[in-house]
Amino acid sequence: MKLHNNTIRGVHSALEAIFKEGQYADKVIERTLKSNPKWGARDRSFIAETTYEMVRWWRLINYLSPSESYWDLFGTYWLMQGHSLPPWEEFSGINPDRIKSKYEKLEDPSLLESIPTWLHEMGKNELGDKWEQEIHSLNEEAEVVLRVNTLKTTRERLKNQLAEDGIKTYIVKGYPDALILEERQNVFRNPAFKEGLFEVQDASSQLVAAALAVEPGMRVIDACAGAGGKSLHLAALMDNKGKILSMDVEEWKLQQTKLRARRDGVSIIERKVIEGSKTIKRLKESADRLLLDVPCSGLGVLRRNPDTKWKLSPESIADVQKTQQEIIQSYSSMVKKGGQMVYATCSILPSENQNQVEKFLASEAGQDFELIEDQKVLAQESGFDGFYIARLQRKP
Ligand SMILES: C[S@@+](CC[C@H](N)C(=O)[O-])C[C@H]1O[C@@H](n2cnc3c(N)ncnc32)[C@H](O)[C@@H]1O
Image (cartoon, rainbow, N blue to C red; front, top):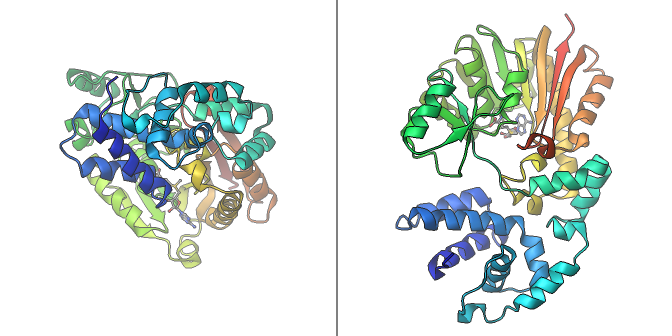
């Protein structure tokens, strides 16, 4: 594969924004590509993929070639991919034999999997024997998965429509609304996306709304709705009949929900910003179904957001765990007697998942609830993102 100096520079400036300015990788890549409209499709995918992969393997790359120079770091990454380097002056500081022998001697799993040492220790403590395979799976490149908007089309029809545009997809048993792309490509420019025929949503994430067992006509609250991915799925499962209250503490996220609902032909979503405990108290026992897609460490979606591992710390995980317990304790009051609630995270750590549900059930607020079932979705078993989904029932 031929390297081009200008696209490597594009990767360097993206890495600088991510590591020196602490910006989010997906946003940086989006902006880098937008501000360089002349780059062709191949250049764009080179920049996006290389930036993501270098972020993913950042600790390992820096261990193999401790250097301040982005050329040294890129060259090391390129060699790790099994390529050879062109005889450019920029790569003169790299010694491929030294890098290879350093890699071959490596035994420390946290370096081999390119994660912080504290995270390796935490993962081992929480997941035991399953940890090493799980972090290995979470370091793989994610599939692109679509969720068919069944309010506007069927899976079969969309599959054929995309195939006519050269986008080949396949289906996997157990995910009734999902289509998986055979080859990674940008689907947001496809007319079917603009017409609201699909959303991009991982297959594991599609299990969350399905677990809430909604029916048309119900009153549903999505209390951590964010940009509305699950609210939109719920609306489709309810055949756009009933009411969904999409809530969040961040108004700008709910604004996205509004735009997406319009594109997807969803009219049953109402939005409400959570301003404090009063907002929750006013909705006491008002929901047939409540979704708590709570903020979490994001460790289950490392394949999509590899920069998360450099932003997390034991303290930030402890903080988010505190928020999770506060949310389930207080927000569960919105479920009607006899109603149901789903508590979900995109984390694989039991301390954010089943332990939180157990703690809630043992508390005073949880006395009215019982666990119906839970799914501990690991990337190594599902092939998709890591998730936790617990379904609880409030006693009549
Ligand atoms: C995992 S994300 C939700 C993703 C969203 N459900 C989706 O499908 O796109 C968690 C959300 O919880 C929100 N959040 C954080 N603290 C909250 C709180 N105390 N109450 C409600 N939402 C909160 C965040 O702003 C974030 O949008």
